[in-house]
Length: 161
Length: 439
Ligand SMILES: NC(=O)C1=CN([C@@H]2O[C@H](COP(=O)(O)OP(=O)(O)OC[C@H]3O[C@@H](n4cnc5c(N)ncnc54)[C@H](O)[C@@H]3O)[C@@H](O)[C@H]2O)C=CC1
Ligand SMILES: Cc1cc2nc3c(=O)[nH]c(=O)nc-3n(C[C@H](O)[C@H](O)[C@H](O)COP(=O)(O)O)c2cc1C
Ligand code: SF4
Ligand code: FES
Image 1 (cartoon, rainbow over the protein chains, first blue to last red):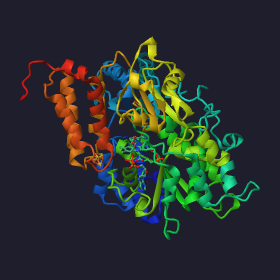
Image 2: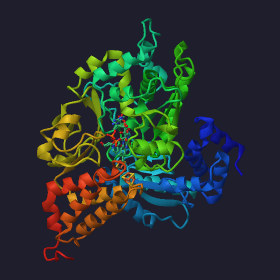
Image 3: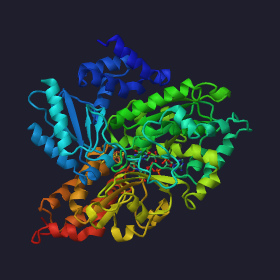
């Protein structure tokens, strides 16, 4: 089921495109679904497909092509650390290692308590602020020294406790 | 909790004659602020809403041509010329698209433009739409900078409410609807035809060119695509005239350019300086090489551009022609600085991984070749390289370059060849001496 609230968000996106081109809103609709439900399930894909008049497989192609869609559930906080070259030159890879250590998981994994998923990512478009990390697809955290990473993780953990 | 911290990459006052990033402080992005900096005067001028006679579409294009503005997305294609390709009398819908999918490693300028001066892009797009007789436009924004997408939408709302977008703009007969769209993590959608596919709600796999978007673009209709910075430059040109714009750069390279300086410098950030500024000056603005070390190499135009050793780079000026003459490209203006402690094999390994990861998989040379390049560089880096590997890398790169649908293939191949050309000894030093040629 799609809630009325979600429908309103979908409609806002659909309205940007010609009436015959509703499919153009698929990227945005999937992003909205992901914000709400944490990931894009096959069922969500079907709902979006129906809403936009697309074949479910066409929606699935989009989910799988773009890196930021979660095809499986992720932790409450998805942490994406950029390790591309410009960031690597300014401790991007070290930030990732530090988090692996601190959270006790390897890149790509989720902590046992389901709080954090740690991923490496390609250029986030914030190279001069390295080390940079994107949290839950939306919050860009800049200049993440080890101390700042510790602060952030500890803060999130204690807010949860 | 996640308050963006210390993002001050463009508020440092170390620009030279800035046109786009002038007088910004992070909070003055609103419509009123933009207007107090002279914003929307250019739009009023062309529409004849400033008491003058207005400009015809041809006059607008002529002004942009006279300014020598070249596409800031990387290829440096003359913007006025591109605009003149749009079929003027086309009976159906035409589209205008802004390419804000900034994903070229090292590049972070479009984000600052849209975050801190979004109306410059809106006004530039409105002027372009007027010049080409286009009534609908989209700005496609990199998915990773979602906050910037939200900022841009807020700016669009301001412009609509003030009658600067929509029907009968400023009381004239000019209509232009502008919307924001976003990507979601695919570098290839920065390639203009990949972007169009994505905007149509599909996988972002590039199309064959030609036909260029000017004849077959969004939904198959004539479309003009320009980079964010290209559009943001337009209001200044119309306000001050093409001649003044050309004047502040150098011949064939008009205006200012924003360079994203990253890597081993003291003060990484965005620097807006006139075209033709010496590289040495730009390095100085960015605080010089970090920790007093020595400059080793520079990747002058984003990760796809060939690396240049310090000695060559220090002789260059920052403009399309000088960098091309030195054997590289100005590209997106992302200047990646490396000091003398950097291992080139490791650097190339990371770049090769990126291209492998981002290849869209349509063309065999790119899909297979990028993975092959990465595997070979990886084994060299792990001390398992073979004597024949450098020739192999060059041959794989040769077989990708020029044989693919889009330029990602070239972008993967060129850095490999340049790294081996300039730093062959570093690769050789990592390869065990006694491996058989046949291994
Ligand atoms: N800003 C960024 O994040 C990135 C930028 N790049 C840059 O992109 C560049 C390659 O881009 P491409 O679009 O493949 O370059 P291109 O040379 O094919 O095209 C440049 C522009 O001119 C137009 N154009 C060229 N010839 C035309 C003709 N005969 N008729 C009509 N229009 C024509 C194209 O449509 C396009 O908009 C590279 O130089 C690289 O530096 C690459 C990766 C990322
Ligand atoms: C792999 C690849 C990625 C690209 N990424 C971008 C990008 O992120 N932003 C951009 O403006 N142009 C990018 N381009 C260049 C565009 O295809 C196109 O040339 C540009 O948007 C045209 O705008 P301009 O004339 O204003 O430069 C990319 C090209 C390739 C081959
Ligand atoms: S060159 Fe690579 S990225 Fe470009 S279309 Fe071919 S496979 Fe896709
Ligand atoms: S390289 Fe890390 S944000 Fe661009």
